[in-house]
Image (cartoon, rainbow, N blue to C red):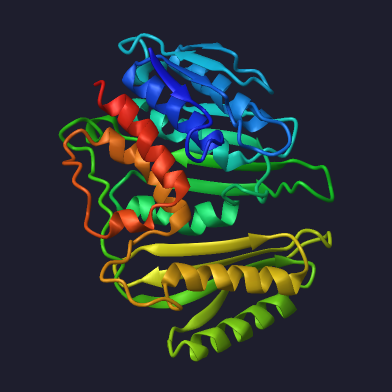
Length: 354
């Protein structure tokens, strides 16, 4: 039994999500104490955590003690590894939430398990209800435009997504819904064929594309591109800017902006901002992208091919590559966020025992 302190390092829900995913895959039971102890407001499991854990337990034949909303202690006991084969995975599942909890934090929890245990010939379709654009979680737009293309660039199987409707935490209480189809391949994910997750150098940024959701979407898109061009000129950087998705929303709080930088090595870097006054959203998002591009800093000799927010989501996938020599790339560790450091710590707790 692995014991984890849920308040260690970042001390949030990501620690729990990664731990139960690795537990289900490796067959090692885990107990987590002090869950989300560092979070303001109510510590313990939120609904999206509880929903993801219960669903993962269901499809993996695992047992859960303390998986209810508000729980500060959780024990996850994986099912029999031979019985939890691709034959037990169905081609379709529906995961329902009663609140706009993040759809993609649920996806983040179950994706590694389905990637490894899924059938070789059939795609697995998840229909998930909840929030598509919610605070402190990946948005539909970020997952569609950054996360999935980068995973495919690294050699992982194709993922298709369909946005049925958006779900926000403000305004209308209508829940969002997304269909995600995973084209898994058991024979390509065994020990011999599993693609190595390698954090390559970034290359040059070739263009930046803006996605804008707002009641005044067209005007906000023009303002965003104008401010970004000026910031790039001020830093003596010449990068083409174009507008992608521009979507008019029906509530004054439904304001979202995503900036995606495309690189010469085929990767994408993303920064987004959600909610608040439109001018604040623009400046917050652009400042984040400029930091990600290191435009305002002295040049590093090495820059990662993925952004800060995707980097920590790769750690569990790295841990699944048993052929990988876990050397630390020179300069790469400097770019680890607290989330990435926490994910590394959790993964090592499981990997060192296999």
